[in-house]
Image 1 (tube, one colour):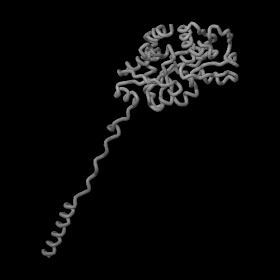
Image 2: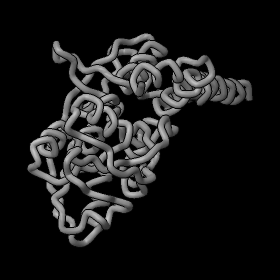
Image 3: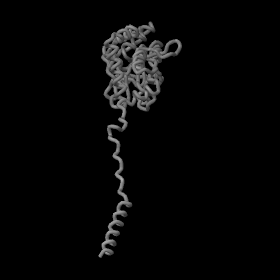
Image 4: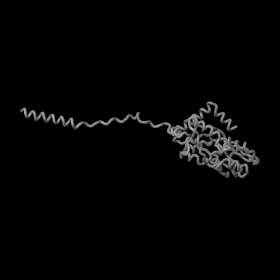
Amino acid sequence: MKRYFSVMLSSVLALSLLAGCGGTKETPAPAAPAAEQKAESKTPTIDKIKKDGKLVIGTSPDYPPFESLDKDNKVIGFDIDIMDAVAKKMGVKLEIVQIGFDSLISALNAKKFDVMAAGVSVTEERQKSVDFSKPYLIGNDAIVVHKDSGLKLTKLEDLKGKKVGVQIGTVQADNLKAVEGINVKEYNLFTEAASAVGAKQVDAMYLHSVVAKSFAKANPNLAVALEIKASDTAYALRKDSPDLTNVVNEVLDELQKNGEMDKLVQKWFK
């Protein structure tokens, strides 16, 4: 009996030892809470601009006083001063890319630059492919003629049968093409259209009134013959950069509140 009991006890001890030696499966450590994981930035465009140290804008510098070239071929203008204020707000430098106006929107969406700053008219068609800042200029378009033309204009339709110069890719070009009977002559630059009017190669040109007045002031052979209500003017930005759009809007608001916008208007539109 004792021997039987000893055998049983030995078996129990052996089983206990086996159970102890087999060990238990370790439970994996729980994953870090989602809150501890790195959150995605809400300002990716601004982050990249600050990392690169520059705000890049695209423009066509042939549209004074919005943008033009000075005697040293430096791009200057109303838009440039505002964009410089945006760059300073972000603590970066301003870099300017010069592209023909009709290629600016596609270049913007191809990320060649961050903001299209080129006296851009806001239209429903353009809003399908880009976002716009708050309008910073509301005004009229204008028809410019040679001072000796003798043309009497009250509406666009009065230009039927006439040759009218305009910059390619602009709202004004679209408006002229919508009027049957106008011979639309498109130029890469508005300066080319202005020269054509001055040389009587075309009967008129169509553009924003503030720019029209600037050309007329610089060229005594040109005169503004008619003003027509225009679309609002704003800055175009990619639809994937709402953070940058917000900053541009903030700067426009600040310039209005602190009186700097009035100073810029007096500087460039006098």
